Length: 346
Image 1 (cartoon, rainbow, N blue to C red):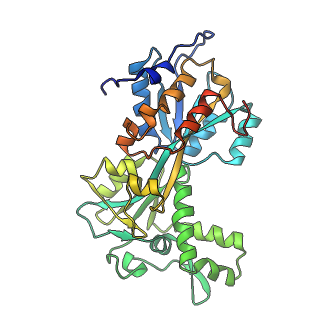
Image 2: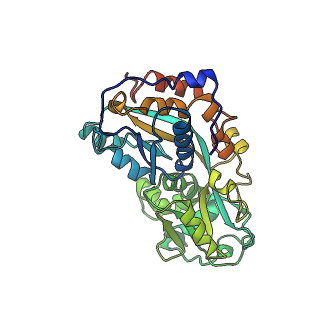
């Protein structure tokens, strides 16, 4: 990638701060496959445009990255966890138990979850959350009884959809995207179809009904993808009828292979995500281990560089890749500058 021209204001945040010598001199990052391409772009630009080494960025999923982040403090632990969902309370508790007590949350912007299939495959062009719930639910209510999902083809779910066998490739449970998919698509579809109410009428408690709404069938119609979106794309390449769940940015960089469907009548785009019209969008984050600031060279500077107007703003390289810029970018920048930890402390 060519060097980025940096304005004086952006360059000012990159002044090298003297610090104690450490065995490790590069920032280490792991986590979300959705955040991975953004972090990789920034890491390369950071290495090219500063005196700091290029950070090491690994994937593995949000849950995996946060688990590594919470292992403890020290040069043998990662400095930053990327996540396509907010850190959970139990993860914060695990971090605290291992000495990671001061965490800085950085919201980098917004992304959409899209539903895409082979560009020359069946005409999957319009979905609703109800379609996906009825296709992927482990159990549904039929004539007042909870039974195993009988739907075999998409036309069984919705007569307007192609009469081809259901073959869905969705993020595995270690990915933050999965949580958003479950809550914004499966649970919403369960409610929209009246299935959640029917489950409660059939004897389930509200909590059990909610869990049942998000339980995915295990008969092969839905396949969990534990790798990144390239694995999902490979599965679709090998299955004409396959439909995958992707991040918007990945889809937009593979439009020669994929076509995308609307969700609830709205096409996914940076504009519809920014406006809130597209129903399946989410904020993206990274989390900084404050105890490593001033110890691992370039850690704070990397975060400041990442969230500079020239990088994370609406005209920056991340927006060009598909990230929707955070409308409260200045507040995020202040959080990093002031090293404000979760809970409001400094």
